Image (cartoon, rainbow over all chains, first blue to last red; front, side):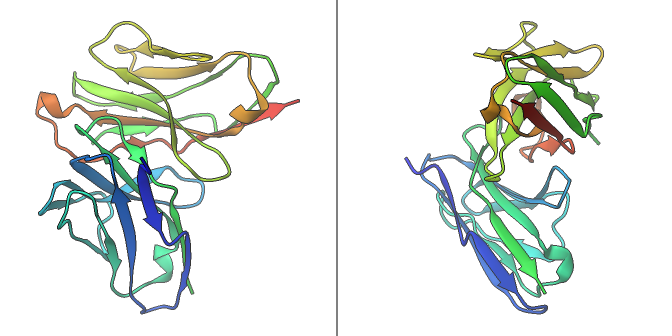
Length: 111
Length: 119
């Protein structure tokens, strides 16, 4: 089992560019999540999904979009990158909405 | 809204000693989960221990144990026989149980405690 995988590990974007952060899990988990971690802070929830075709907003969804076409994949889309989106992004999954298992993170810098 | 507070930004302990990290939370729910996650410099979030609120017995995992005080809404982590590999950021996290009718949304995290191990 690879667990939760994320690509890329690092990325630098220019203001206004777009990109997709990829997340995949091979544990057959129904629940998947995207968080961001700003310096000196805990993680904050961006979006989550309880199954294929079902997504919902978390605490900080502005500037992001998600889709869930399969159980395994949960990509996060940034349409118009802004410096405020400079952060470390974590994807996580869980079987029944309780214990969450995290990917290794993507460090994104917007200049 | 639920909140999680970690009042110790940084703690330092001698190798082989015991250290306790504090966490308090605010919720009106009765059925929920509490977690401690470890984040080493690699940034990977690693689950240390989990507690279910309906269980009175404190969770333990080898050298890690918790003191769960439901009425006081307190959830501290005790690390015994501290090792150099324990050096990391430690995050306390909360989520309501989906089985109590809570939503499927994510964890609420504290700001973390930076644990330093002195050799």
